[in-house]
Length: 221
Length: 217
Image (cartoon, rainbow over all chains, first blue to last red):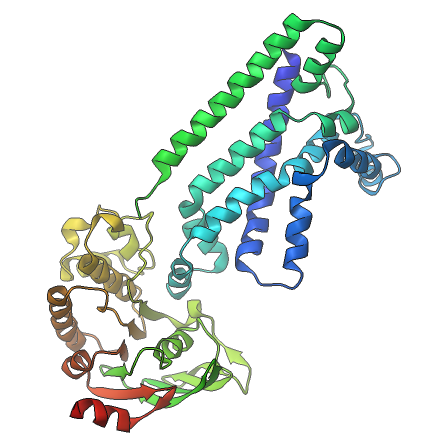
């Protein structure tokens, strides 16, 4: 059996997760701590991938990331490569698709932190930037872990968006879920079954890790 | 002159309008019923809230002047602020909490010993008692070598015995600190036992009548 799709899925999920944590943390911070007009509009926009059919999201991404789209053209000018049907293309699509899954747990964790802790840090001389790393993040580790795990799991199982943006190019964009679909189409149930089993096992491990971290991460306060 | 404060802020229900000063080594008790605007006042002095109008001067340095558009953020003012039911950083040990903003590690260790929490230094805040947490909070505030000390109902969440003990400790400590200390309290007995001067606040205004009335009672 070809294990490359599984490797590709894991690679995609890992890269997406790391990038998402870096991008989602400041967004969650702004949503929780900064007052600005139009916040509900921004929040709804971020949550949109949660409720939108993946194929619809994939279609719009195909347009934006395509050779005539804003991002696609920009990328082509900078790197000389297209975004559509490439690995960087599906990374970008996954970032948008899994963004709410990374933001939400961080937001919830930040909201739970006693505001006075931040004020104490300010009074003790910490800038908001330092306070973020010295007070907020250490007290939101459960949220960081949940965010990483959800983003990873969600990207591992991605199908519609990746298919629209990346197609199914073996070794490049043919991730596990697409490979399973194609195995079934060509009636190769054994391979589809094995690959599915691998995904189930990964999901189970992910949940075990979440539960373990939840139990360990409580400060008891 | 140590600290000079003149503040006006519109609050829901009434206006906070007070003006006072507090010199080095003096403990001034801001006394009044709950909801009189005392906490808002110390938050403004700490830089956590902004008044609509006002001036705060520390030894001639302008921390706040709304007319000139000067506002020093809390980081720059260097005040020690102890909240009611003080939230120590739950992820840090007592020692790390106290040394969080310490400029001098040795002095921070001295403070841990002074407040009798040296033996608890490796514990997390949730593993020590309320009184020990408040001591750690005082040590944390003092470890930064603050210019002004603000105590916002620091003992009100403690049981009577611990409260009396900590009051005594604060009284002893006061002599060693040569900085303006503001103590927010609604407890007249506490104010009378600790303060050099009383500043009665009622509905956002200084109200000596309220003090006379309370003393009569």
